[in-house]
Image 1 (spheres, helix red, strand yellow):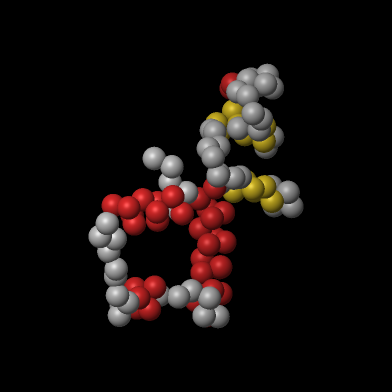
Image 2 (cartoon, rainbow, N blue to C red):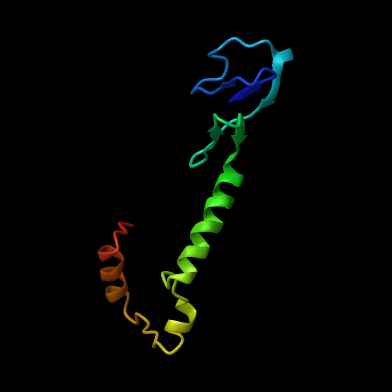
Length: 102
């Protein structure tokens, strides 16, 4: 991904797929797995992964905490009994049930 001085955003799966005069490049980078970029075409603004996730994450967190969608598991499970697998055979059964193959 690169941004040129005249506001052109170029993104592709391969570096160098679009010839660009390096003197015109004002920003260069790469997106990793799970990352995103956003563009506000009306404002001509480019938003990077962290700022998108921070903005929308805060908004979602505020709405979720106010509506009771987030549960504090530590509090809910504080009185729960923990049972240990004592036998290797029992442990192996649980591992297989959970999808462990080795």
